Amino acid sequence: MDETLAQTPRVAAFALGGTISMAPGAVLTGRQLLDAVPGLDRAGARIEVREFRQLPSASLSIGDVFELSAAIREQVTAGAAGAVVIQGTDTIEETAFLLDLLHPGPEPVVVTGAMRTPAMAGADGPANILAAVRAAASPVLRDLGCVVVFADEIHAARFVRKADATSITAFTSPSAGPLGRLVEGAPRLLTRPAGRFTVSVPATPRPVRTGLVAVALGDDGELLRAAAGRFDGLVVAAFGAGHVPAATVPALAALAGQIPVVFASRTGRGPVLADVYGFPGSERDLLARGLISAGFLDPVKARILLHVLLAGGVEGAERAGIVAAFRAAGGLGG
Ligand code: ASP
Image (cartoon, rainbow, N blue to C red; front, side):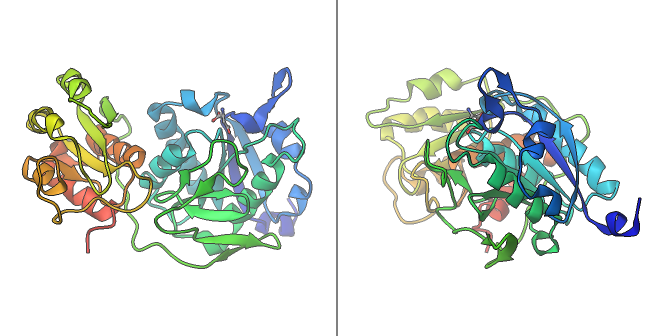
């Protein structure tokens, strides 16, 4: 290998499928996706791609992401400057956060995808891949954990959401805003999130089942009663700043006596409160009955964190450890 090539940062890319690869009559491989990106050869990175999965992202499992995280760890340990994950957009907000929780190292892990298939006019996949590779190879994004690079914006995995079903600017960070953007192809960081939170999980995580139940107008708690005995942990997507119908409180209190039950806001922006309202089903009531606050984490991210903690991150899945983890990762730890 000549000297300049040897000094060029190596980026490990992982292709998982998704709209970005859904061509008419065929699913494109990671290699084919990279080959179709104009200017990638001038992105300042040596890219090695692995065909990791070929799935619509709705069918990826938490086990797939544990395995992906281990494969990324192997690559960065072997000298990769960063990693790029190319996948379907439907579950990016969850997979990226899980990768973030599992990645204590300084190397950037960058997740991207596309809202348009390769055959559509104005397909966004190539531009997103190019931006993701540049971000993963850049020292600017070190020590930030996992980020989502999409439509030339850089979002922290902890805050990002898929907030539009079809737009090519579907990814936003409603509570915090983007960390930065790519300008003339270079990642520019405008802000850094406060702290980082990671969980160490054993090579063979404990198999656990975690659920997510959203409350709705007139809910009488039937789904919550049906959840009893079926989950190791549960997240409730509550109204507003952490409120549920009074009729659901007995079921929630019973569940919280058996398993960790976390409440998060289903609004999509802002935290649940701790001490403003005191009516039956309010945040104060839920906390008093043993439920755990998700802070700023939205329901799907709260469920990912709960799952990881139960899968092995927290000693004996103790409640105090879970509360502390949610305080730290949920942004209400002070
Ligand atoms: N159905 C796709 C997925 O695998 C959507 C996308 O990639 O944008 O998530």
